[in-house]
Length: 291
Image (cartoon, rainbow, N blue to C red; front, side):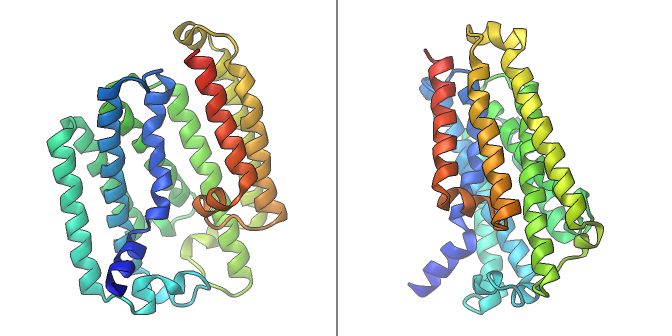
């Protein structure tokens, strides 16, 4: 039973929330009531969950020694000694094979190329790209863009360029916030990575402000663009921008004031204000698009 819990911990199911981005194309295309599209998007979601877990395993195997020095990462199964590298490697193969079989059996071939590209990108990230400043956060952001692209393919819906752009910008914003937390830990003598040599607090903070500003402008431009108004039959999508602005401000408060931006997923799982903002934003979009 202990081993089973360790394998679950190794897979990091709490991070599966990130794969929710595969649902965005379906949601914004107004197709959430299309059962066939929902089913195939669900397959895509599961495939990305399996793929993401396999990448986490490789990352933990590679960074085990470094993780032992981190206040939180030292409790990960490999770093703590709960699982050895061979056990983790076997689990990686099982998850990778399951990803391929699910994608090949239930989803278009083009989806298989996307999830394969996602795996290759993240293996490269774990191997060496995460040690190159700026490139590391770009890789993280591209992972989210690939999720959105995969969701569009799985649900057989057109993907708005606006959604792709805003996904990239938001992921960059969150990745930079995480780097800021890494810098604070490094300044306190806790953990470090090579890419941090290319960052400092001033640069990361300024970059976050730029990303937040561009996200807000992009979202407003999206909501008032003629093609979007024509597609959804409403000129009121701009009303939901209120929640986007408040959500970004809350996240910046967590980052700059509370200095707790280490894990975006854990922040969303624990912060009731952010949860309320996301729910109200989704509800607003749903009422405006599906009225």
